[in-house]
Every structure is written in C-alpha cells, then in structure tokens.
Length: 307
Image (tube, rainbow, N blue to C red; front, side, top):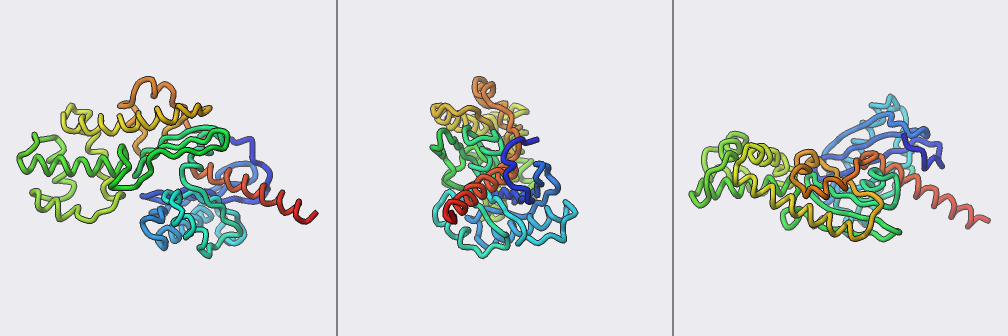
C-alpha cells in the first residue's frame, strides 16, 4: 500500500492510455484500488475522438466496478497519462478537450509509469508493449529515449516484432529467406494461403494489429528457429542500448514494464536483468500520484494568491 501523497481525501481516477487499451482505476484516500475499467486505445495519435471516448468509457467502467456508478465524473479529479502526448500538438489537443472531470491533470504515459514503478520522481523505466520507449527523471530532468511511433520507430515493441514476423515470412514465401516455424503459424493466424493474401490482410493495419502477432516470434525463437532468434536478438539489443543510455543518468531505480516484459526480459543482457527492479505499482496508480501532486501544487498556489 502506498504511504505518501495522502494530501487529498477525495476519490481519484487514474488513467493509463496506450496504443492497445485504456485502463482506469478509482482509488480512495487510503490508497486502495476500488475498481478498474478497460476500454479501447487511448493514444491520441490513433485519433483524438477515439482517445477521449476511451478515457471516458474506462473511467465509467471503473466507477461501476467499484460500485460507485452513482458518482458523476464531474465530481472527480483524474490523473491521465497517455502515449503520444509527449508530442506538443497531441498534448495541446487533449488539454483543450472539454473533458467531463472536475479536474484533469495530463502527463505522458512515461511519467506516470515512472511514478507508479518507483513512487518517486527519481527513477527510470523501459516500456515494451504495443510501442517501446525509455524514460528517466532525475533531479527533475526528464529524458526520453525513443518513443518515435510505429512503423518509423518503436524497435523492440510488440508492433515491431509483429511487423518483422510478417516481413520475414513474406521473404520466405518468396524463396529469398529460409523457411521459419513462423510461416505456418502466421498463415493460420491470418487465414492466408500465400504471400499475396498476407499482404492483402496486413495492408494499412495499425500498431495494435501487428502487436497481436508478437508472441509467435517468441514462441518460434524459444523452439530454436534461427529467423525468430535473429528478430528477438535485434529487438533485445535495442532495449539493452536504451537501458545503457538511461543508466548514465544515474536513476535511483530502473524498471521494465509493458505487455512484452515477461517474454523479452530473458533475452536482455544479464547485467541489465540484475539491475531491473520490480515496479511497485502499475502506471494507472502513478497517474493518481501525479494528480495528487498537481492538485496539491494548485491548492498551495491558490492559498498564496488569496493571501
């Protein structure tokens, strides 16, 4: 249980919006999670309307799960951490949203992940989920490594692994690369019979779609498939390099989180694995901590200004 940030007795919403889903929690003044709600993608890069709808829906579902459906969103403060709002244009659009909350405190998803993982403003996180990114906050100095989005970035992410699987299977079907255990699995999963039908199926698909294919790469690699091992090794080395940069900032702790953590961690450099600390709480808890911090600052400023 958390022991800090008890400066507000009200219920708080914590929201973590990523490329695949948006998760909300409602917490009380005892730092207990009363309810959770999960909805669709919360990254505004996938559409502002989609993101705001997901935020609202997940918040309502969390209240319902807590048995608090009678409470209106307009009565609650929300800490909202979203992928994509590290880009100023996306941050501005969400800030300008006529949101339903009593107050909305917006941060990028990396900051709330760091706060949740360490219960402190001093730490670093590596995220490998639908996308990938590294982040550190030391002495109030923030550093972001990667986070450039799919397909131009996000190496070592679920979307990247899924895309590499498709590329390699297509090369194999064309007779350019050796056959892989991934061939049959991918063709079956996509209900395809040849390269042409694969291309038709994946054309124009989102990061979320490709991320759903990531596990087949790890399955094949763990069975000794050379093509899959090469993909996993490349992705893991990118994450290793992100960690090396973050560690030069001397964070108090470093953690790894995201949907691929369990599968990717064993492939990382052994020294890095030994340095990784288990996250203390998930990002949505970090969103509540952020909201409480920001509200406390806001209240102190109000007192000073009224004095």
